[in-house]
Length: 123
Image (cartoon, rainbow, N blue to C red; front, top):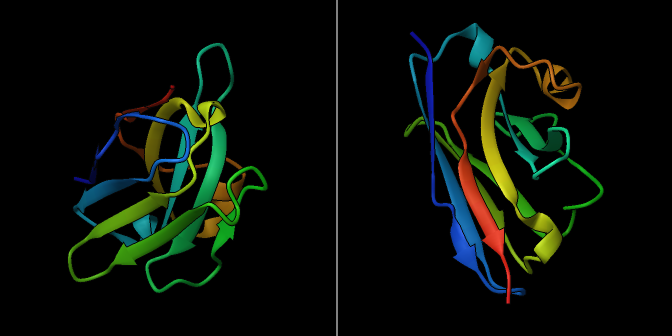
């Protein structure tokens, strides 16, 4: 059974750094690619970043490119999202997701989702 559990969210000030983690249990071919998404209040879920466990197909949304960094610990079954220079517009629930390839995640077609972790950026 595949399970994705996010952690690392919190309340920070603009310009701060935060690192999210997503621990994956029960990896299969359907979890060959991992991604991060977010959903702000009153808005639809938005793609943030995705990649395979080996770093192939790494892609970021325009809104976070240059500020957020995706990486994966293959042996530890954990993916991370390092978020630098956080802005109030980054406030959202952040979700981890898995699919067979990064292209599916880019189109929000994930096979598995975590429950999310709240990130709040406010002064």
